[in-house]
Image (spheres, helix red, strand yellow):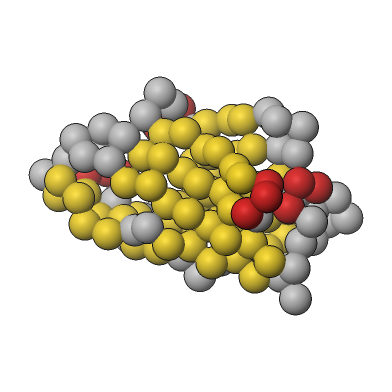
Length: 116
């Protein structure tokens, strides 16, 4: 059974930083594309950052140069370092894993609130 458990969300002032973690179990971590999505109130879920098993990383334009996705294969954990946070970054952040045979898995999310 695949499980993705996010942690690290919270309340932070604008300009501050947070690091989100996603601990994965039940998957061969290095064989998956790992990603972070977010969903703000009243908006659709959007891709924030992704990291493929080949090491390619992609970011949404709105977070480029502020957020960094990284992973620790030994710990089966993916991280999202978020710097220079803005109020518009407020959202529930979800960890996502896509395997090579079409499986898609989601965590339950962690709330990030950025105050102005």
